[in-house]
Image 1 (cartoon, rainbow, N blue to C red):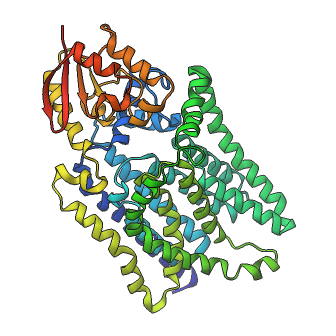
Image 2: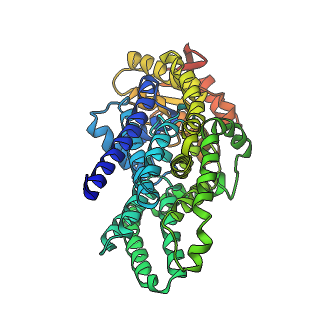
Image 3: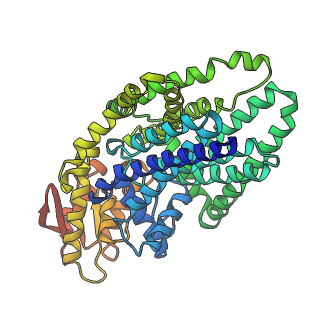
Length: 495
């Protein structure tokens, strides 16, 4: 067999492995298809539907996310014919994009053998249900697009005319940012790589500068579109939502929830701990020959994998909330370096792979053996999701045309399950509590006979989101208790 034939056979075998990793990611998510949508999934979907029905984004419906995420949910809802459950199919698709993109990055910078293992590892750890890998959250979606941007950029590096590729990588980096503010990790990893190349070798500076400018141009296109929409719908509201609110209430700069970091870190240790150890070995393999390369004024492309871990860690820390799905930001870059480590494991490879995957598979198996009603409780300790579906069924059975529902203080997915546009802009508890004027708006909404909802599903005590007692007073004066669904009390407005 000739050299060319061997290369073709190796490439095909690598794609078989990548396909196996993608299939694993789908199978890991398949069981969770029958679990209720999560609070974030349902909230994004409800806001996207309200926006599609004429409500003004960041005014009538509000979320601390850029427009790209809501455009995606709005488009998906249209394509799926309004199917709420199909959101999990979207998560599967982006999970596949994440696995394939990660493997392609590794193949370009560290070889086919490392890429094969990276695909398998990423397929498992990125879909682990205790990290909410099954849900269509912003971290999974933006992380997949960011990884695709890195794949395009490293592919461009060896091409004769790479500027169009780098422009495309910048577009993908901008799209990742439009989906979640933490989506900057891929873009900054590539820009850092270009800067290091330019600093080490004079002959690379012009090429690296042009590549960086092309990337920033692609990024600029997406940012310009976001800002144009912001200017048309309300610049101050947009800025407050995507930047100001988070900076003031919960981010690395204010209100970081370190207790939650310790709580969710327990699950990260189980699911990502062995992968992180392997990634450290992979980083050592990448960095060990770096001194000799620097002396020769060269920078191995595999350094981008180390930069990716660093920028993803920065994105993780900037969020400040440290929810379980935040850890998904680290799944792909850690899997990439773990693939490098496994490609050098030799006869210990089988033991290493077992050590890497068994913890994830074991805890995922524990989630999967639960009933459909307990899947989300086992996966994310979220008791609200099953109740959201039950509340939605009750509401749809009892409502009359024009009657609506308010969820007090918050459980955003109930609106998506009920196919109900929110009448009050804030759907998450932290926003009801901390957003400017949110409590006064709530009192005005519930106290106005023309706007007030027919039904209120009380998930939390009114005093927790309105300590002034005004909402409690409205419940006593204008509503009567009609039923209970689990711990949720349903009220109906009195004539």
